Amino acid sequence: MSAAQLWRRNCWLVFEYSVRSVFLRKASWAGTLAFAACLAILFPFAFGTELIQKAEIRHGAFWAINEFVVALTVARLFTVETEGGILEYFLSTQVNRSAILFGKILFVVLYLLSIQLPLLLMWIVFYNVPGNVLLSLGSTLLPLLVLFNLGTGTIGALLACVTARSTARDILMPLLFYPLQMSILLAAVSLATMSDPGIVMLAGTSNESWWTAMLGVPVLFLAVGVLLSNVLFQE
Image (cartoon, rainbow, N blue to C red; front, side, top):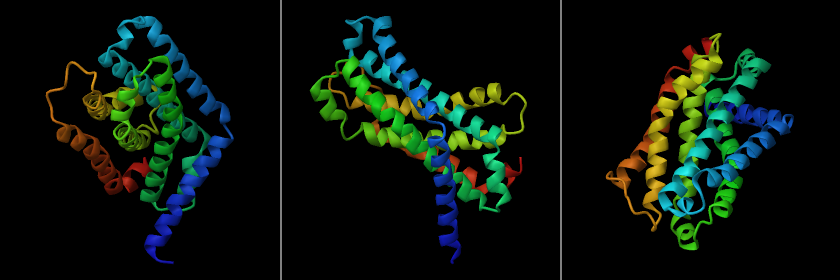
């Protein structure tokens, strides 16, 4: 077996093991989705039915809820795995360190997407999203969510490694996570609003600049993760 085939096999092993661990904790996925549903229902009550019809508020509410859910999910996934000794198990089997990193990032991307798609349906229903907006967002929102999750997964994986031995991990990781996450959050919000024909205020930065941010964050953090994978997992 070649080195590339072994790496892909190790990456898939990490991904498959992570998926199986989720099926053993079904309440974790359902609980997070219930939390997202509560936020989606409460936001219209907080803003009022008239204000929520404004496109800026409608999009801002979606991405605010999405950020809450993403932060909760990423923290929960890596905390549970650290406490359960799953990472130590992979390290003891001599699996390639970068394969562990890529496998975990792929898992986080798809896991977040499995929660975001139902959340997107809730957003359409509760916020009375017009049909013309759905047509305009159709080719933009799904790629945005995938890139957003990819950037989130890389940031979360690296921070989980850096803070693994910290006694204040539950406090330290969110403090580090939000500033690093902010660039792809701003890019996602800007690109989503630019795709909505009902938006009155458009961001001054061009679409190309925001797409560069969405693509650049995953590439940057993936490169750092691969280069420092051995050092990070030694921590």
